[in-house]
Image 1 (cartoon, helix red, strand yellow):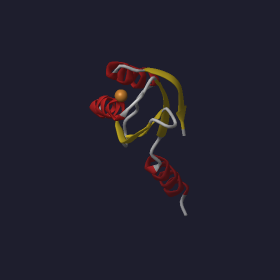
Image 2 (cartoon, helix red, strand yellow):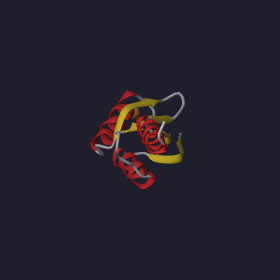
Image 3 (cartoon, helix red, strand yellow):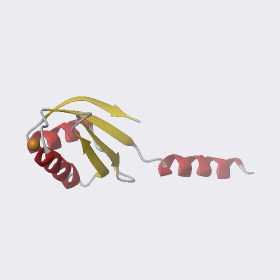
Image 4 (cartoon, protein in one colour):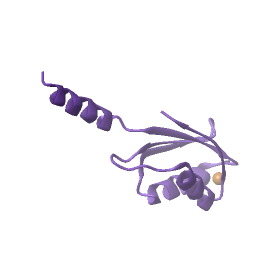
Length: 91
Ligand SMILES: [Cu+2]
């Protein structure tokens, strides 16, 4: 295998890995909280597969392929829904 082919393959497999993000959300109490957070995160047009857990007090999402959502953008979206954020974990 040519070395350039190898690099292309490594690059492609890296691209295929969607960046998973977990955001701690402070103050959620019910289904409406989940709905508004999901709505604001969707509105960024940079996140998909958004789920919010009241139990874990976290929002889970994946960055849309080819897009990056910064911590500031995540915090702003959740703030817009009316909530504060804690730690942000990226995998
Ligand atoms: Cu609520």
